[in-house]
Structure formats: C-alpha cells, structure tokens
Length: 283
Ligand code: NAD
Image: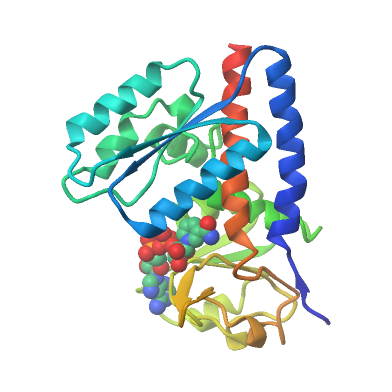
C-alpha cells in the first residue's frame, strides 16, 4: 500500500478560510476577535513564533497585540500585564510565549490567565475539563493532531493509539483527546521498556519527543497513521522525530516535517481565539 502524506499546510489553509468567515460574522455583530501575545526576552525561536502568530492573525482579520518585555522582567510585572489583559474587553485570547526566563514561575503565570481567554489551553481549569470530558479550550498542538488524523477519513474509535511523549503541552493532552474519541490509548515515555514493540502495536502512532530519527519503519505497524510532532534542527534543516523516508515503506499515512503539525498549531490558535470571542458574545 502506498503511503499517503497528510498535508498540514493544505488542511490549515482550508480551515483558515472557515475561520476568516467566522471572524467576518463576528465583525458584523460589532466584535473583532483579539489575541494578545506576550513575549519576554530575546529567544530567537520564540521571536519567530510570535511573528508568525501575528501574521496569521492579520490574515484572517483577528486583531493582534504583541507585548514585548525585557529579559529581566519580574514575575509581578508580568502578572500585572496579565491582569490588565484579563480585564480588557477587546482581548479574547491571551498567550504567553514559552519558555519564560528563570526568575518567572511559568505555572503561576499560566494560572493567572482567565481560563475563558486561555487560548493555549494550558490553564489547569481547561486541562481539568479536558480530563473529565467537559467543554474547554483545547491545547492547540493536540487539537491540530486530532484534525490531521481525522483528515485520513479513518475512524479513531476502537483504534489502538500509541503516543510517545508525556509532556503537558503535547503527549498527555493528545492522549486524553484520543481517549475522548474512543481510541484505546498507550502512553510511552523516556522510561518505557520495549518502546519499539509497543509502538508497533499502534494503529495510530503519535511521536512527540524531540529526538531526530527516533522512530523508523521498525517501530510502525503496517498501514498505521503516523503523526510526527517533533521539530528538530539538523544541519540547518528542520526534521521531525520520525525518519520520513524509511517510515514511508510501512506507514499508511504520515505527516511531514515541516508542513504537518506545525501549521496546524497556529491554525488551532486562531480557531481558539475565534471560539473564545464567540462564547463571549453569547454570554
Ligand atoms: P518535552 O521535552 O516536554 O517532552 C518530551 C517527551 O519525550 C517526554 O515526555 C519524555 O519522557 C519523552 N522522551 C524523551 N526521550 C525519549 C525516548 N528516548 N523514548 C521515548 N520517550 C522519550 O517535549 P514537548 O514539548 O512535548 O515537544 C516534543 C517535540 O515536539 C519537540 O521536538 C518540540 O519541538 C515539538 N513540538 C512541536 C510543536 C508543533 O507545533 N509542531 C508543538 C509543540 C512541540
């Protein structure tokens, strides 16, 4: 069977058209969805991410405000900005670009964001709601991963999904979402014994580790759906955690890097911002 590539850019473009129309409908009601992004410090990768988010907002008509703060910003100052944005009626989504400098307690910052504006979906209220299956703002990368899997047209229910990685931003939430879609889920991590054997049982294999070429064809069940979340820079090139060429000998579907999960993450951020604005309007 030939491996089909799940094109995250094409899917993103399609979804962004729908987001654009939702923004227009809100504007007809006098509401412009607004996203505030706070960037602390000079991390070059973070600066690029923030710039991409700003551009993506502009393209679909979302108002974006970027607050750039000095590397030495104190936790108290950052909290003041968040309280201000929580109270700001023109802002429906707040995102604090991670990582933060060491003098700042990341959890304290995330916990200070109004859960209704937590478009990253990292606040414990949103995470807790996800856990118990209640309506919430879902974290962007996992949400994008589910959409990519759905794009194959294969049902998730009843499938064995293996997730490699247990971070709070990708591994754990995507496992919960797959469970919510009635997959049987196994989570693997750095201490997992027999990783390859477990991975090979997955009808769906999500790899979110951050190690280039960790997974090759010997980890993949023939015909499986493989989602490569990893972003690694090797010799100035972006590569995932999966050896793409080798995996294509076995996988039924696979996401490329770049052009797979990456574009979907920003698209889901736009979608969450619109969702937050729509909910505010209904209140
Ligand atoms: P993380 O470092 O927080 O977590 C990595 C996980 O991998 C851990 O749970 C760890 O237990 C596990 N792990 C480490 N070594 C392992 C091994 N040898 N075998 C099995 N498991 C192992 O990373 P993260 O934030 O979840 O990100 C993972 C990757 O996804 C990174 O490359 C990151 O850049 C990328 N990422 C991409 C996007 C996107 O939009 N495309 C978004 C978030 C993260």
